[in-house]
Amino acid sequence: MCQIFANQPLESYSYITRSIRISGHSTSIKLEASFWDILDQIAHQQNMTTPNFITYIYNEALDYNGKISNFASLLRCACLLYLKRPDDVMEIVKQQLMETNHNN
Image (cartoon, rainbow, N blue to C red; front, side):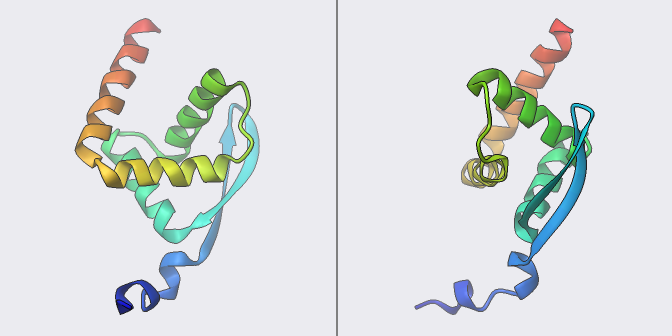
């Protein structure tokens, strides 16, 4: 088996807990460091802070689903979507943010 998977640095998959405010409520989100890096990168590309980006995702997921049973998993899957097709995903996000800003 390829050692690239098993021999990765411990820091990349160590849990990091961040405290953020979502819609005025303090909460903690626990993700592996690599996922935080990806979320930071996506937020930066959108000229947003990571907490603002996460709040945006949370509110949008609530609008679509009515509830969120496992937000950390939703964030991990968002990272995977981004990694599969970063250019396509970022273009869609930019368009949706522009539409949201025009409607407000």
